[in-house]
Image 1 (cartoon, rainbow, N blue to C red):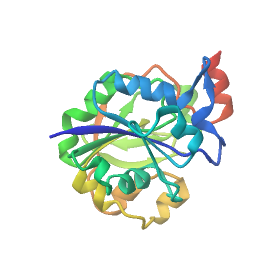
Image 2: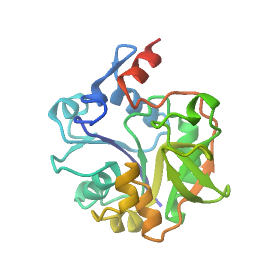
Image 3: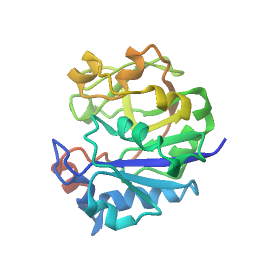
Image 4: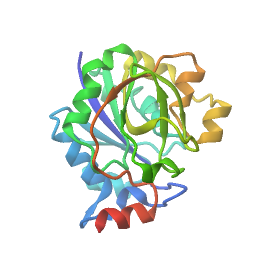
Amino acid sequence: MKTAILIPARYGSTRFPGKPLAMLGGVPMVKRVYDACIASELPTYVLTDDLRIFDLFGSKNCWIDQTDYANGTERCAGAIKNDFFKHYDCFINVQGDMPDVTAEMIYRVDEIVDQGVVTLWTDMSKELQSDPNCVKVVHNNVRAHWFGRGLTLGDQHLGVYGYTREMLEKYGTKQDKYENHEGLEQLRWIAMGHKVYLRKVTFNGIEINTPEDAEKWNE
């Protein structure tokens, strides 16, 4: 089965406008994510709504679509309808705010991506337990039971997802009330009755959710 990496990069983030182009060590964040992904040697594409981001990569490595998608998974589902992506059977969605993603993390998803939907978790530090920007996952080591921001239990969820083409085509645009409340796209899979499989990884980086996170990364 042939797999491609997709990096959704919407310019107009609510919490951090222009986030994909935030400078991290003198490099736009989305470019850092892209460079980390191509280290896996899997075909990698940026999905965006903005010409400033498109111009960083060009038409061979970037797909521009100005549709107002609700989240990154919807943007991925919209993109794969086009012939540009017809040669791929599976997709790995690496969030555009994951500059510290590694090839090893991507391989962990790719190992079981043919099961439908898979994502990653890591041990959560005490510092992040009360941080609403840190997404927590409650699970049984094999699959996820729930995701939430305000939870004080569970482990840290990381924004890397794998899907088969069939599952990604099912995602659609019908939002669930819990998804809306938490602002978490992965809850839609659970609301639809699909299993979300998990893999554990070691993660020593920072997810960039706010301008303060970018400052911390640069420090």
